[in-house]
Length: 110
Image 1 (cartoon, rainbow, N blue to C red):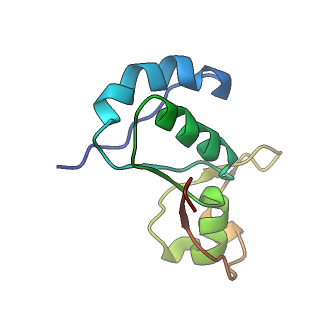
Image 2: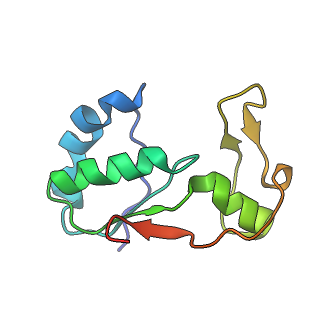
Image 3: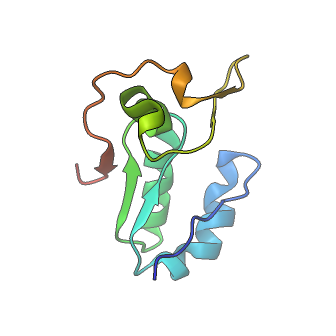
């Protein structure tokens, strides 16, 4: 049975390894882990942190939610708003122009 999504509940990304990874790496060690974030870069780093703690099957959404919404808009599987780091605060999928997005999923071995 799949594990439900886990919210890392971190105030800043710099605490991700010492909080989320230290707490959940043993639980996730033999599971498939898919990570997603706004633009993708934090997921690249977070994937490496989990892998360094023995979690072997870690993938992330290449380009993050932003690229996914550019490609699929509200026609994809993502539900909700995307937080952005400017005055817009949160975007609906319709707020992004759909275009050719390329690969959606990436793992560190890509």
